[in-house]
Amino acid sequence: MFAQLRKNGSMFESMARLDFDVQRAYLARLGIEAAPPSVEAMRLLVGRHAERVPYETLWIPAGEAWSIDPYESAARIAVDGRGGYCYHMNGALGLLLSSLGYAVRGHIGGVHGPEGPQPAVMGNHLVLTVEQLPTETNPGGVWYVDNGLGDALHDPLPLVPGRHDQPPFVLHLEQVAEGLQWHLTHDPDGGFTGMTWTMAHAHPADFEAQHQWLSTSPESGFVQVPMAERRDATGADVIRGLVPSRIGDGARTDEPVTRRAEWFDLLADRFDLRLHGMPEETRERLWTNVLAAHRRWQESQTSQS
Image (cartoon, rainbow, N blue to C red):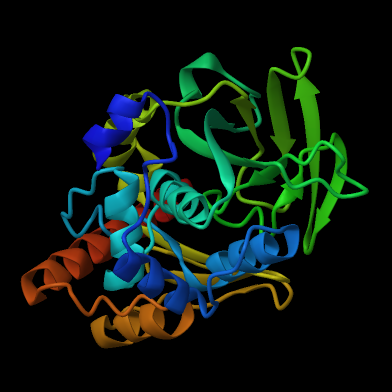
């Protein structure tokens, strides 16, 4: 399928469709039925995706080398009960929306910190837009859709400059370079500062180098800190290493979960990561590496105090 997407020259072309069984399983995980494209149906689908499919990087310490093929990502979500980071989450979501008849486009994005947008980070994020769904408040009919930013968006945003409230956060969209680029400013209480993207159509190859670095480099935050995150309408549940926390409504940071069985139970109960298809040796590798990452974090905290 990935080779087919390359041949098409851009992501989510008309021939790129989920087969019926994968689409049915995907929708079943979201708890919805297929419906004709509409703003209301899109909002329901994207919101359920945020609530039921976790943003997660546990496949990295588990030693599972995942591609960013949208079809493979969709199958992992639909059949294996997994999640992924931005390329997996938005790649699969874009393919599902396209399969349901939505006009979906993929774009090159760059998540950044307080230093602001930098050319070097472009390609570290896959952005989705959905076209041809006008409303009174969004007459252009273009929507910004993003389930790949962890704690940021729960619902689609109209691609309209200005303030957009998504409890517990206040987000801002800004047009850059005469509309050829857009910039999202996250809430100060969120997990990152902002993200810039270009409106040019992306190609799968645009993300390969960044994916390789993000998932394998010892300097990558995803390699250093295993994590899972699940957004809901009032905030997000997060676990970084062994430390669970809550952002937004009911905000708190809990004590580290240092018992193996309790940690896996927490993944299942709070993040719907049951890992039912993971072999025992892979599960043990995951636990060993997450525990080691937690101990390194503890040592760093001690050295800084």
